[in-house]
Length: 268
Image (cartoon, rainbow, N blue to C red):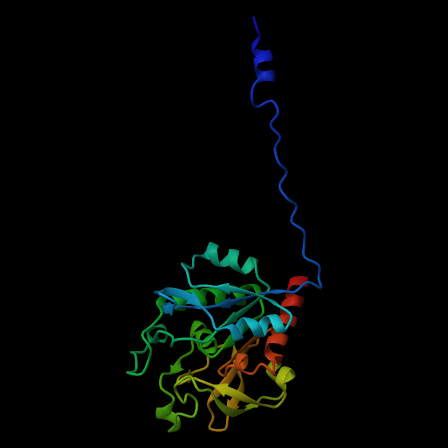
């Protein structure tokens, strides 16, 4: 008769080995920082497909990689506190990209006839990412819509149709054509340390910042007074511009500044 102890010793589980979990190494301080970029989420066509899709023009993430970072796309999705925290744990810097107009109800207005139909999921996603980034002082860069999302998230408002204020369409010519508009940068600002006292911005925005949110300072304006850049004074690197620096592939100073700040953030 075989004892129960003998049965246990010779059973099928006797040779099992528990595989050790792979050790997660801390990346070396000189490895490229990871930069998360928000994306569109809307109907798109490619080949035979016509579906809702998350996408981003190549010039955005090419600007990051050419500046020494690793680009990771962050498509809109349900933005719980746990999800936002997990996403921000995995990146060293954040770019809130261009796109459709922010929902006017977020800053207490009815939509202007020219205002885009809102992308509610994207609005909520980017608002939550920015708030989380600010809380942990994660470096961030806002581009066009990104500057407007930042201002609205912190309690500011927007001009919904700039041509009614400035009397021209110089900031958005239409047809996907970017217009070069000189921008004067405030001396002593973080932006001035990166680009100097003046920059020619590639413009494509029909909206702009109106009432500036508490905590933000204006760091650039065009000749007719339109706010073209703001900074968040309470964080080491928090810049948002209305123009499209990704369209100037021979001038990556804003992206290089973000990547450098992200590298320092990771090293803290």
